[in-house]
Structure formats: structure tokens, C-alpha cells
Image (tube, rainbow, N blue to C red; front, side, top):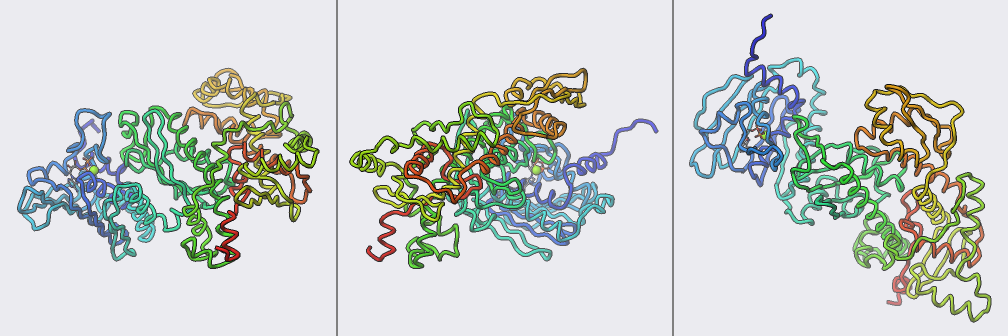
Length: 625
Ligand code: ADP
Ligand code: MG
């Protein structure tokens, strides 16, 4: 067959193969167009899962009659100027409408503010129908019928009405989060109606929209983020560690208002929560990144959901740092607000004081209390005290070593030298001013009861110590080379040449983490040493994971995260079990270490390590206030 130019319709159908995967992709493109046109209301109707009908109506700028034919012509757009690096709209490729029109029966009815009547154009399987007058209000209605009638092969891949309807709901929710001031409705014979009333563009409005989409309990169980680094601004909300899901579907991310699915962002979220969540649980997050459009490439895939950052390390660091900081703050919050649950449990009346139902309300009442009383003045993450030496200097990472050091960690408390009774009283008096106060007693062999000037503190000693040991282990891990063990025989790993090259480039960093790796001819690396902490490990898998990660993000965090996880397990085994009796000095030493250690407000599993009950609250319990 001779070479020939493909027909316009054929070209559009090929493009449709990429851009229009299923009904939800049509909805995505049409809603994006409505938003780009400045709409304040977007109404979506579907039938038959979107395969029979999709209709999107907006009150945006409209399309002038003379431009209707261009709107459905390939590579025609009103959005892109001469600079591909400066994309500020959701659309820019000028191919959605012609692609949809090549595989369905499409009609566009539109009216601009300047015109006193509407016009309509149609396109069926690529065949353009003439423009004709129509009746409509200002704005645009795009109707798509019989999607994929012209490409039956694609039709066979559709999953059924229910699945397609729900994919469409997801698309609408995802995009609606980024446009809180726009009212969205999604209705049809194939679904229950989704209504998202307009909020506004303020932070409160944004959170209201997030709650509409993600559920009313999310705001109360999340922490706000607001961080800035080198021109990249991050805002949003992330769940507290006790509020998780079994999958990562409830993680929404936006770059300059565009919904994206990005491995780098997902990885950063995982990394940020690695310390406080079990492996199989996922945080619920909404992250908005705002940056100069020139610092991010959105022209990666026709569906525009992929992005490439100019500086992936910067973005990752910003996300991880901001979430960790927020979680550290939340540790304090868990502690302060645990008191609310206690109040509610003791005395149901207390719950209404906190503005919510009762103990059954769980986190919600906790949160209300947090708002009412504010965080306690003490924030371990911001504590100016330097972390105390936990006695791990020079420790090997063996279990036995840990046990010995655990003992060391409790010696030399502040009271150890105060033998005179008077001296002791004086020291105790000073301790009352400390954030976690002076230890008074240990009850049920696990709870330290302490007293500050205006509150009662209860510490879960096992949880607290586990966290301290973990933080100390991690500190040791990241401040000097990790001990490694020589392999009897070097492990040779065959890899694509680029992967081998990338690993070699990072060999110095990897060596710091105890992984001795070097080139072994073309397309292979040899591993001679592995981190002792890992014990018997699947070296092949580890190295391949690392190669993937370097390719994706240019980091070797996989190894760090694995080591951190092992540190967590070791900490769990090595810490003071409940049931161990502590002397006053030991208890006070533990409190001081908690004050000095960032993140010590929650245990490795995200539960609070201590709760604080204000004297005023205790008085309230007894009806004295
Ligand atoms: P793109 O969005 O990439 O520009 P499309 O094929 O989606 O490409 O749309 C082509 C053009 O049609 C847009 O640039 C815009 O000018 C116009 N258009 C499409 N939908 C609407 C709408 N709902 N309101 C106003 N103009 C629209
Ligand atoms: Mg578009």
C-alpha cells in the first residue's frame, strides 16, 4: 500500500484513542472547558453510564457563532498564546472537541454575553453539520450521544453502567475540589444526584468543598498545611494518623489547580507518614501546589493528568517536611484533646460543653475540644531543648545492645543527685514548670501520673518509650554511616544499562546507608555489602526498587524508609514494656526526654503517648465550676 495522508476524521479518532478512554474522560474534558470559560455553575447529566448521553451546561463566556466551526476543528484553541511554558488554563491542546466529535454524536449550543441569540453546531462520527440558530441562555451546552458508536472496538472495553457512572462521579469530585466557588451538579437516570453547592475561594470555602466531597468527618480529622519553599507554595489538608483508608484513592493532588496523579507526590505522602502509619494503611490528603507554570511541565500526556516538575527534589522535600511538621503538631493535639474524650466519658455533660454530641462522636468531639482550648504551650517539635543523648552513641544495632542502652536511658535523671529532702522538694518545684511536669506516681505498672502547675498528665510509658527509642535510632541512623555486613559472595544483579548507571551515580549515598554497590561490567551491578540491620534480605529486589525510585524521583529514599521501618520494629521490641516498675528519677527522665524529642507526642502507630487534663477541667468534672 502506498503512503498516504490520513483523513481528518481518522486523525481525530486516533487522538480520541488517547484522550477519550471512557465516558468519564469526556466529562473531564467538557467540565474543564466550562471552567476555562469562567463558569460559576456547571450542570452535568448522564444516561447509560455516559455511553448514551453526556450533557454539560455552563454559564461561562460562551462561543461566538463565527468560532463554532473552529471549536470542533483540530488544533484550534483560544487558550494557548505563543508560550508553551506558560499554561494557565486546564485546556491548551485544542483536541478534545474534535476527538469526541469523531467517535460520537456531538452538539454544541452556545451564546455569548454580546449576542442576543444562541447558535448550534453538530458533528457526528467526524462529519460536521452546518451551524444553525438556536435558543439558549448565556453560556454553553455540550451534548454527547452514542459515545464510541464510530469505534465499536473501544465500546467493548466499557465496564458497565455502574462502573462508568461512578468513574464519572470521581472525575467531577476530583475537579470540584479545586474550584470551590463553582456550583456543580451531576444527575441522571443512571445515578443518584450529586450536588455541590458553591462555597467560596477562601481557605474556609475550600475546606467546605473538601468536606462536601470527602465527607463531613474529614475536616475534624485533618490538619491544615501551609508551607512555602523556593517559590513553591503548598496548602491543603492531611488526615491525622488515626484517620486512614485501606487504599490511596482518597489522596487528591492539584498543581496550579489542575488535578494530577503523580508518583512523586504519592511517594512523598507515603514517606511523610512512614513513621506513624502501618504499611497497609493510607492517609487521606488534599494537596494544592502552586508554582510558576514554567517550573512544571503539564504537556506530558494528552489526558493532562501527568506532570513533570523541574525540581522534583524540592517538591518532595516540601511535601514531606510540611506533613511531618503538621503531624508533629498533631501529636500535641492528640494529647491535649484526648482529655476531651476522657471528660466526655466521665461526664456526658462535658461533651456539650465541647460543642459536640458525646463520646460516641470520637474524633469530632476531640477536635472541638482542641479548638476550644487551643494546643498546649508545649510543642515537642519546636522545643528549643536539644535532644538528650539516649545512650546510643556507638551502640551496635543488635537487640542485646538495645536492652543495655534502654537501662542507660533511664539513669542519671534530674533528681538523681538530689538526695537531701529539701533539695528534692526544690527540684520538684522547678519541674512543675516543665511542659510535662513532675512525675508523681506510676499506676497499673504502665501509666505515669505527673503534675504541672495547672494540669494533670498521664503518660503511656510503653508507647512513649517506644517512640523515644525509635527517634534515637533514626537519629543515629541518619547522622553517621550505617553499619554494614560483607556478603560472602558478592551478589551480581543484571539490570538495564541506564539503571546500572543511575545506581552507580548514587553509590556514595547508598554506601552511607550500608549498601556497598559497584558497576559490574555493562548492564550489571555487584553488591558486596548490605546494611546489617536488614539481616537476610532480598538484595535483588531491594536494588531493583532503588533503581526504579532513582529513575522516578532521583532519590534513594526507599532504602532510608526500609531502615526507618526496621528501626521502628527494633524500637518496639527494645522499649520498656508495660509492667516495668519505674523509679521517680526514671519517670522524670522519660518526661524530660519526651519534651526534648520531636514527634514524641504520638507513638509509632499514631496514638497519643500522653494526655493532659487541665485543672480547670478536673474542677468542672466535680461541678466546682
Ligand atoms: P482546548 O480546551 O484545549 O482549547 P477543546 O477542543 O476542548 O480544546 O476546545 C476548543 C475551544 O472551544 C476552546 O479553546 C474554547 O475556545 C472553546 N470552548 C470549548 N468549550 C467551551 C465552553 N464550554 N465555553 C466556552 N468556550 C468553549
Ligand atoms: Mg478543552
